Length: 213
Image (cartoon, rainbow, N blue to C red):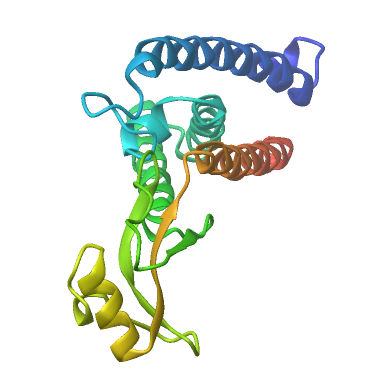
């Protein structure tokens, strides 16, 4: 039916896909805005949802829109290849789920956004963690830069800690964490990855569609 309407397959696909993409952007942007409205008043409080938790990273910001476009592009290509609605829906769920897990893994391993190293002298208490996302890696630093386990001097601060550090040649304590500002770095990286994949899948769909009779 499409081939008898006087428009090319490319034009037909572009008009239909553009409408679906615009709808996906509008609805996902609205959902991200509603989530931010609910989340921000209690963000990073002891009773709230911290910025680095999976729900916050995946449910807010521009990443939500990029994820919607990625899902649309993946579903369109899989539908064209599978030619079965239920099969395409199942495959799309698997692909988008797998992509979500991969991005969550990069967050937890700090693969794309490395943590910062914070140091402090042993004579005074270290600065509070605050809104930082700790890696759980902390300890003591020698004058040569070697890092040792914190239990080599298991004192919170004060004279005992300072004496232990001097006795063992430690010059500072350290811990690794991502500051709250890395929320946006993670958001934009995820957006670039998902958006780039959406463009790639859309291009593949166009090529496959042109080869179909």
